[in-house]
Image (cartoon, rainbow, N blue to C red):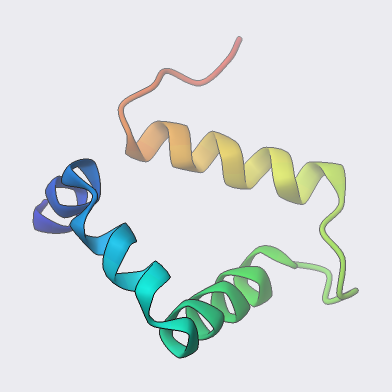
Length: 64
């Protein structure tokens, strides 16, 4: 996956951090996606699910 390779070398992260508008839009979209119950806050289960999914995408086995 080209995106994963780009993230691993840090170029995409650097690019996002340098452009405040792009970073704000990414953060807003990600938060909206993670806030499944649309409360404007992330509860423990929403945070846990997001972190577990990130781990799976990076090849980390899910905790038992």
